[in-house]
Structure formats: C-alpha cells, structure tokens
Image (cartoon, rainbow, N blue to C red):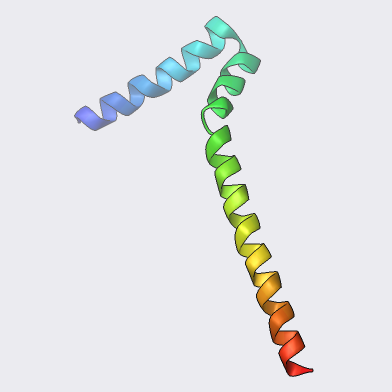
Length: 64
C-alpha cells in the first residue's frame, strides 16, 4: 500500500511540474540526468565494436 502511494505521489509531482515549469523544461531536465549514462553506454559500445573489427581483421589475415 505504501509503495503504491509513493509511486502515485511521484507521478503527481511529475504531472504538476508540467503545469508549473512547462513541458519543454520538464522534459529537458528529465533527459539531462541521463545524458552521461547514454554517453558512457555509447562509448562502451564503440569500444566493443572497435575490438570486434580488429579481431575480425586479424582472423581474415590469418585465413589468407
């Protein structure tokens, strides 16, 4: 019961922020908190792809 009330209060605060600050500001502030996480994930995927490409090149050269 207490968890339901807490999630309801979080939702109401999110909705009331739209009325107080405006849609653009609330969405911008929400995404601002996750920008660093998205950047770190993108760099991690880039590193994995780069190592996979180097490994594939080494395998290709070994076959020839």
